[in-house]
Length: 293
Image 1: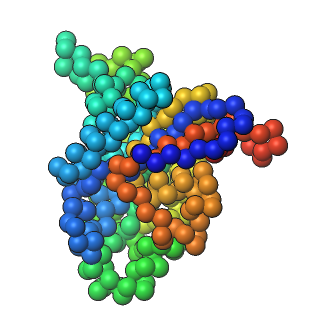
Image 2: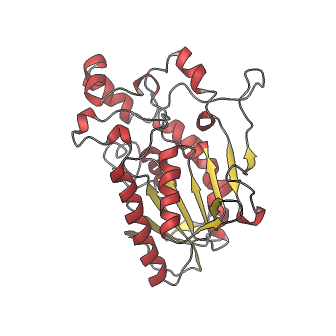
């Protein structure tokens, strides 16, 4: 458990618990060169990934008990590997309700799932191993695409892109499951952003490829509209995301940690909870968002 805190001279706010999903099927090999670019591909957790999520839940349970705290809400991407990680953590925390009559299980706390927390879209690189891509494009160009703030990899092929755009996890939507709503089944979610895919709707749909800066652009509004207001109310928020969406949020929290010169070197390990204690914004701050202690 990594802790980031400070003097606490200003009124304490909520805590943000940030972590990356468990090991996924495309990154199970110990040889990093054979790990595949996953992006928005909806792969599952491995057995190790599920064990990592359970261990993270146990760690958080001890942390919350020691600090006499509870989780108030959770946020997660639309991708299965992050949602499964979150569900396993909530089970360890005893935050899952099992309705014996309907057979439905749902979280005790509100959960917001959003495309804005999806992993970076790697375009034409999706599915390729690091070594394969280096052979095709050359290591120098590949590294430029992987670590550039502004330049995305080549776009996904149009035929594949059109197919993917019909998948639920590839749509630009954000929805909430709230126990107050007393869902009748696990698919009862309240849509708060976007709408379902239609070729004739004119909806802005999934990107063909993204640079890190594009991930930051989509994460920032989610921070401002969803996460920060909850922290300002003193709520403790659990976020389960991906390497690049977590990096983008770290840039928002502290641009000295993640910026153009360091983004290549900042590594987000699987299921290592990182706890940020927030404080009220100073009257001299430029906005009304919580700030990092």
